[in-house]
Amino acid sequence: MSENFESLQRDKLGEFVDFGIEWLLDHQKTKELDRRIMVEDLNLKPGDVVLDLGCGPGLWTPMLAEKIKPNGRIVGIDINSDFINYASENLAKEPLKDIIEFHKGDFYALPFEDESFDVVFCGNCFAYVTDHSRILKEQKRMTKKGGKIAIKDFEGSVLVVHPVDPQLTLKVVAAVAQSLKENPPDPQFDNFSGQKLRGFLLKAGLKNVSTTSYAIQILPHLTPEAKRYISGNAKWYADTAEPYLSKDDLEQWHSHFDPTSDKYILNLEEFYFCMLEILVIGEV
Ligand SMILES: C[S@@+](CC[C@H](N)C(=O)[O-])C[C@H]1O[C@@H](n2cnc3c(N)ncnc32)[C@H](O)[C@@H]1O
Image 1: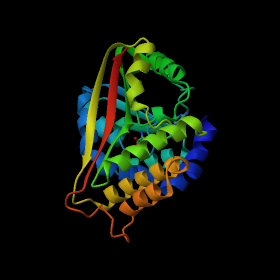
Image 2: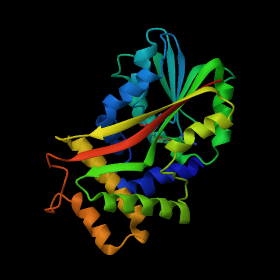
Image 3: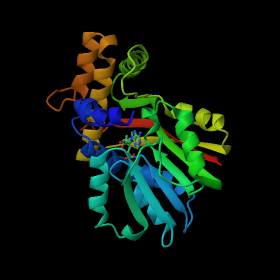
């Protein structure tokens, strides 16, 4: 799984969205305000010891560190060396660098003792996870009794892109669901993982499981990062849906995100984009 994922970053995701770290940076800049609300909802306390699992290039980590300063500690772990190198190099500029550290590591074999953390946070990773009970078992092992596990993922069945004809958007989303089901990607990618998180945590035996949905809205005037994020997403949807869409539908979808087309929508005053993200928190 780990080696597979590294090649997914470089090959498949690269092919879909043209970038790795840049894609995650666009994602972060586009949703930073929403992410700050999610971080608020984790109810972290000063002094907490936190694990940011699957931290990528460490974009959530300083936002989490802000809540546990001055005497907390946060460790970011990711399997991708490029991401960990990027995160570590940027740490020098980070005001909270003394309470943050980054290490390369695998979800399934973490070098921490039992009950090491008050909170284990895992953002935007469960879509790639094949063995949910195994990763949650490992997370439970590392979390202190009474501590929390918080998993955040997106839920791809909700996609609003106005003024695209809703019938076309629904066809694209349905075609993506069919494509992922009939041709499961290797490595794993589940575009509909958000809705399953609550079930995973309940099955893992976590207590007092809470679930919060966030409608992520993107409105004009779009920043360059938001345009790249939305166009990259739209391209991924089109590439994945392609075998199950008519040529006309596919062309129409592409034209809405093509700046050279008169059907381009990202500069329109009436443009409205909305997607769903879900945060599930359980106690150990
Ligand atoms: C979509 S990225 C999310 C990164 C970051 N949490 C964020 O939201 O910006 C998913 C991350 O999971 C990491 N990952 C995938 N499989 C992993 C594994 N087995 N162990 C550790 N990290 C893994 C990837 O390298 C990648 O950084």
